[in-house]
Length: 185
Image (cartoon, rainbow, N blue to C red; front, side, top):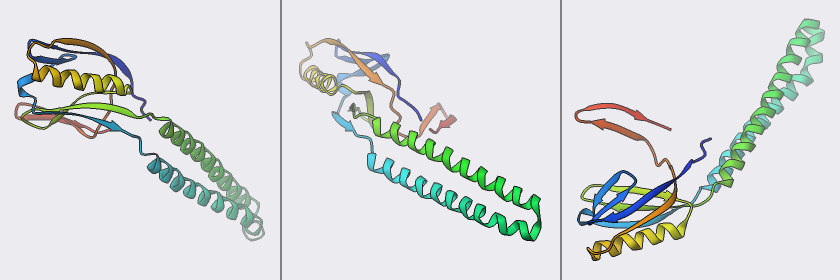
């Protein structure tokens, strides 16, 4: 489970250049900007939890059947077989409990995630995510200031925004003609 870490990001427009941290975007190259809301998929979290719970219940049922059959095994195979079956059944029960605790913790973490707000800009290529923040007001204000700066070359501003690192999918890193790898999370 990955909790996003937050940091302060400085966003400014100076001399018709939008700076987001160390990244620079000439305002005349911005074709479009937009804000978006990133809402955690709580229904998916519940479905995943319930699927895990079904698996854990099946493990408990299998362990219960093994414990119930252990006395029958003793009459056929002997005392050592009873202990082996009993040991395996107890191990499966412990595993089911551990998995249930892990599933519950994962559910609680996923349900406790808040809604984030992101600012995207689109240049000549694909859209770029500028920043993600839990502060809707800050993202909306930045969006409005950037639009104003695009329309008015005299506008300059600087804002400090509490942002988080938010992962959107696979990350590919390539310099020149040589791919140096893919980061999957």
